[in-house]
Image 1 (tube, rainbow, N blue to C red):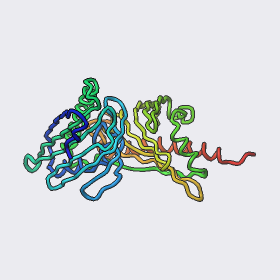
Image 2 (cartoon, rainbow, N blue to C red; image 1 turned 180 degrees about the vertical axis):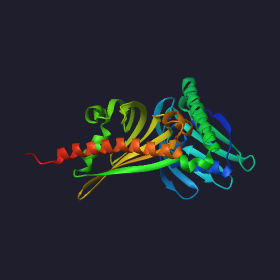
Image 3 (cartoon, helix red, strand yellow; image 1 turned 120 degrees about the vertical axis):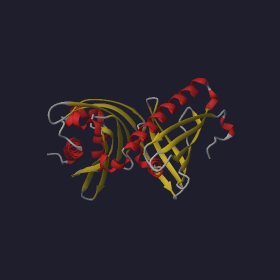
Image 4 (cartoon, rainbow, N blue to C red; image 1 turned 90 degrees about the vertical axis):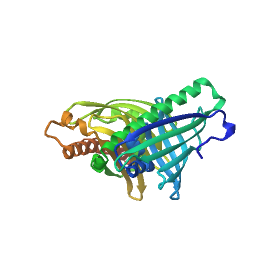
Length: 323
């Protein structure tokens, strides 16, 4: 499974290795749980499991490569006993014609592990500039992924406390299409949302890449950068902040819009990894992890609820009968 078909052209190979201060089973678990990759792997924006039988897994993946948002589908074979995961991109993103690889976790004692990531790829036409592009993307992303896993591994006993998830919901007396349109058209947000002072967006199909200045309760501004993937058929927009505020090591989320006979339910969901080393700098010397979690919950919840409230006003004004 780890070698491209011969007809795809010359095979290029890369190897990346790191040591992780965590048991091999913990490291394997982080790699195996692909849905959480956007929280743990800096390049990953969104991962959806399409099928899984306990061993074989089918994934849809959105990630950045050399600063560009890309998407593909992958097949994985998970071997928990050997702590080994093989993968193959089913529909590789150009310029790739094939991409396969293997994650290998080996114990270095009870509390340390060696993590190896192997890639084998081929490029259509084997053009030197395309090979160089893929090599650069593979090296940059692999180093980021392994480096972050090593940092998380050092704190694996605290991971449950560092990761937080929450949501806010608003009921809206309007069709779901109007609510979804408000959330999707982010270019209009500076005009419609008082807590958004600036927003720039570029769109390519369902993917939006955006930079936004958000005002906090004390009047200060935070600049964030995000990649969003829009799923209008299911009423979902998922995103990952690629530039986060100081207290957040990672931040992913989603907007979900569902309709029923009474109207629409709009939900904002957040998942965050707290940057523990920034707590004292941002919140003061007396602050701890609990106060950081409370601060993040309040700040993100306030802004997302405000956005949903304005979406409600906008959609209900469109649905109101003329007078």
